[in-house]
Image 1: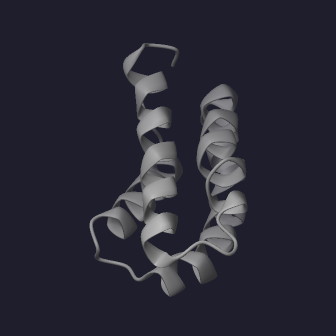
Image 2: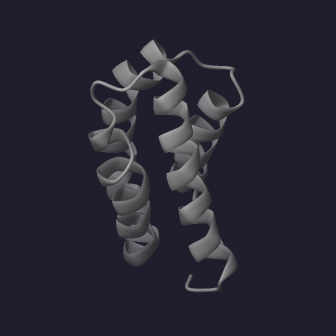
Amino acid sequence: MPKNASTQFMLDYVQSYLDGERSRMDFDLDFSYCLIKHYSKMEKANRALAECFNFYIAEEGFDQAEGLSDAQHKKLIQKQFNEFNAVLRDGFF
């Protein structure tokens, strides 16, 4: 599945948080900004992939994380990232 630079940036951004290279505060403060900045290019390259990322990571992950502990937050984002990657592996894109 070819990814454009904006999609790859967002995947790397999430992965850097999951790998512990980015704090939760940094992730929470910058995620929406980064998604807004990169989404139009993601959508232009592959609308369905951009919408899938938005659903799994933003709507079902980031948007649902308010009030969670740091460990619960990371677990939720990891779960959603895994689900997104499973869709990619299944060849939908």
